Length: 462
Image (tube, rainbow, N blue to C red; front, side, top):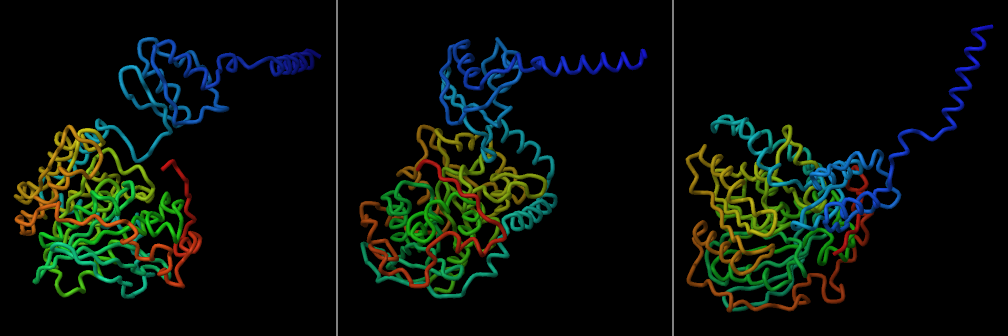
C-alpha cells in the first residue's frame, strides 16, 4: 500500500510541476527589448542590419555585463549568429554573422599560426603545392573546365583612339553562355604585354571612367588589356539576371571565364606570353588572387583594394566555394603568397579592410618572398587617407608597377588622351540586345544544369 501511495504522490507532484510555469522562462525577453535596454543602459545607439522579430533571449538579464557593452552584446547576439560592428564610440551596428569577414586581429592570429608551418622554401613549397591542389579541388573548377566549348569570340568593329584601340567581344564559354568584355590594344607594333582586368563591384561596372582610364592608359603604354564583366553583371545580367551573381556558381564561372579569355588571348600573335598579368580592384582583386593560384601562365599580379588576411570577399561570387578551407585552413594573403617569387604589387587604402596591409599582410608576404631572396619583387602602395575605389592614385600605382615590371612606355602615361566612351559603345550584344546570339541562355536554371548543385541565390540591396 505504501508503494502505491508513493507512486500516486510522485505522479501528482509531476503533474503539478508540469502545470506550473518553467523556472527558465521567467528570465526570457524578446531580443529587440534586450537590445533596447542595452542601448539605454550604456547610452549607445544601435543600428540594425538584422531581423529581431520573434527571437527570444533566455536568461536575458544575466547575460548583461554592467561594465562592458561589447561583452553584453556578444553574450546576447551570439545566440542568433548575429554580431556587432563598432562604428564609433557611441554607435554599434547589429549584423548577421558573415563567414567571409573577420577582424584584423583574427587575421593576425591566422597568419601567425600559418607561419608556424614553414621556416624555409622547402617547407613553403610543400605548403604551396597543397594549396594549389586543394584550392582547385574546393573550387571544383576542373569539372567545369571540361564542359567548355572551343569557340572563337564574336568581335565588334575596332574603334581607334589616341594610341590605342577598343574592340568588344562575346566569348562562348559553356554551351550557349557568353562572357562579354572589351579588348584595349596598343596601336604600336611588336609584342605586347597582356593584362587581364576582371571587373569589380563598381557602379556601372567596367564601363565607368575610372576603369576606362586605366585600360586606355595601359594600352597606350604598350599593354593589351582585357576588361570583362562579372557573372550576372553588365551584359551577363541579360542572360542570367543579377540574382545569379549572388551564388557560389558565380565564384566558379568568373574564374572559368578568366582562364578561357587567357586561353584565347594567348593565341593572338602580338601577345608576349612572357608578360602576362592580372589586375583588378575590389571583387576583381579577389579574382586576381585566385587566378594566380590556379594558372602558372601569369607572370605578374596586382590586386587592388582587395587583399586581406581577415576578409575573403563579401559576395558569394568571391567566397561561395570553400577555398579558404584548403589544407586545414587558409586565407587570401596565403593564397596570394603562392605567387612568390613573381612580381606582385598590393595596393591598399586606409578606409576599407585593406587598412591592415602595411602592418600585417605585407610583412607576411615579404617573409614568403624572402624564402626565394626576392623581397624586392613584392611591393605595397598604401594610401592611408583614401577609401575603397579605383581613383587616380590607385591607377598611378598600377601604371608605375607595370612600367617597372613589363617595361611599358612611361612617356605615354597621360590619362587626358583616353576617350571615355558611353557604355552603349561597349555593349557586345548591342544597345537593344540585337546582337545577342540566338542560342544564348536566357535564364539561370539553364546554367545550373552544368553543376552538381542548385545555387542559393539571395538578392541584397545594390
